[in-house]
Image 1 (cartoon, rainbow, N blue to C red):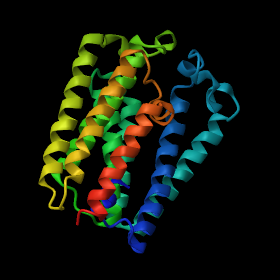
Image 2 (image 1 turned 180 degrees about the vertical axis):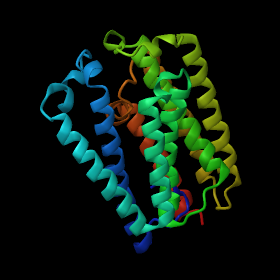
Image 3 (image 1 turned 30 degrees about the vertical axis):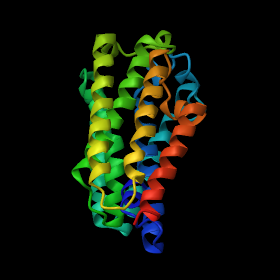
Image 4 (image 1 turned 90 degrees about the horizontal axis):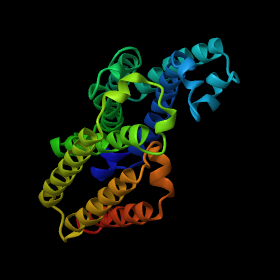
Length: 265
């Protein structure tokens, strides 16, 4: 939803329909990749304190059923994406290629594994532009990329040096140092703030809406970094949804962003 929202066109009926269909398509594609990844990691997951409860690792879902479901979901997802726009299907193919390469090879290469996961998030944002024919600015892509690296680096930090370290099962992850991940977190946060600030001050809307929205962005990154430093971050979605400070800052940013979008014009 990010690209059509930033472009101010998400309220249009045809755009909203394409966004909804794109979300469904990418849910299918990502579900297919997660199923195949869990099939590949079945033995490692059974040794993990939390992942052993996953359907495939626990035996609740058979390997054969998972593979058949993954193939069906990938096929249906690409078909739906193509029905929306061929450009969306092309992004979907790129996403499947990236996640497939990650499962087989990229996950075993230090730093590249972080960039590959972050690229998966960026492709989701690009898919929003492809589905709705909204052009993406360089600043949109930089902000999306840096923020994705920030979240993924936080996840790695939690897996290695936080509350989740006792369940570590992949040897490649042990090659990371805490200092290197902290530097990566700082660099990604700085890149996000700088790129977002440049984008906000270049917006043509009247009023300080976008400029003021920089404040909750900076505070959000600081709060998230603080929680990562305490050992959290293994499950970013849980951290974002259940930490009250992050929720308040998210709401504040949304209010300012929407103010610039609909009031500042």
